[in-house]
Image (cartoon, rainbow, N blue to C red; front, side, top):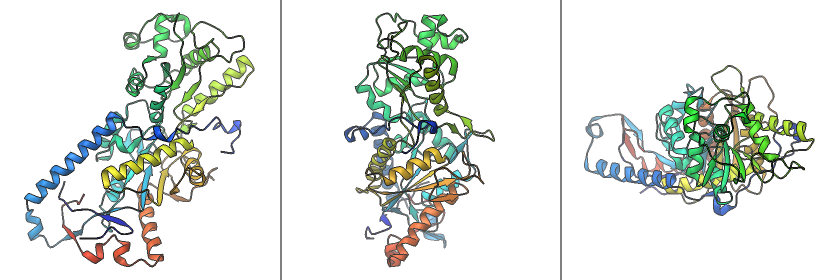
Length: 449
């Protein structure tokens, strides 16, 4: 049996088809969640792991009972895959893998590459860390699975508002802003928030709250009219990008200037209202448009500027997501759990390669987390040219490596790991996780998992 050594963990083969100023617009406290909350299990996570393990068990049984004719007759061979245990990958999504709802041309091939279709016969564990949101993690994973032509589990996925689920223990009645229709309310209720209010509920109850905003017929049907006289909104969460900046900002300003979050009241000091949380702070993001579009970070800056213009005071809001260190700490724990549950690797990787397209969030967050006391692994930042970053410009937060696209990025990461092991005088067998020593093969036409 091949030993677990250095570059990979041998798998049984089976057949299967922070110095920024306010002007930087990235101010506000970092959200660092208590460790006991970072990997709190969710039903979606547990279900995904159970389904994946059951699927693997079934396929291994089938492959042990059935012999492929290709195994006997084909002269072509492919090396059996091993799983890299000393390094891992983490990906942003928009501008790296997806743009305008469609996969970036090299994305599908890049995913195949790190899932074993490479010259080295290795699989690399990976997770997705996006500031995007507005849907449940399960729904986002289903979308990504379809787009990338592979199975993506909630157990390897973090979106901007994922860490907000832990806040359900602290707040009972909350206002949730952003996204399409009722999706963000559904997400919040799924996280455990007991009383979720939307801007539509407030507008339906009192139409003159937003003079220039009228609810559509569908919005009116879904919104919940209620008596707000005895309701105190304890916190405001912007889960996803606002579809109505004017109306949403009006309602948020009303609440932050209220007395204890009571709609229709006004504090004499303007500082008795509920706290405001944003799921991320990206000023711009990559879409199908040739130029970057403004995002949630711009809404945050606008809200803070409006509050100061009205009250003469500073409004302190809190952002989750990248580049906040708490999000990278969350990602570290998720990755460690994913490696353990899915690949049987019960130790942290030495290096995590993070691939992003936005210097101000992806690269800044990766570099600062790597330099912090929170990081046990070496986090290595890679910037790709398929999203926010514009070639020819000098990134304010420089990456350790710049690549043309995601396929170049993953090939660089894998090659760098091989080069490092060759430089450290490892034997070929150690370098390739036992491949040269044991010469285990898979028949051509079958992808080893």
